[in-house]
Image (cartoon, rainbow, N blue to C red; front, side, top):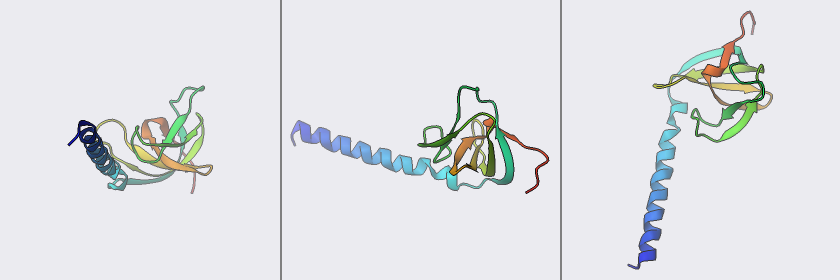
Length: 112
């Protein structure tokens, strides 16, 4: 086998391993969590910044939107993280995805 063919084969195999690992990495979204069903406000984010909304509950996941500080979002459910903060599935203004729970504060006194 020629050297460039060998390198191509190795690169292809590495790509397949990475793709398979990524498939397992997004499994926490299907993991058991806890229902919240409550309004929350984006907090702890600098006024010049925004809270990124992710496709899956992971910081490396694709960004699907963002919320400004002080925005109100509906929190559907959250999943427990073994390390770090929990991730919550939120929805507001046609943006739906996962955010880190440390940037959410429950809005008290709201009826559904």
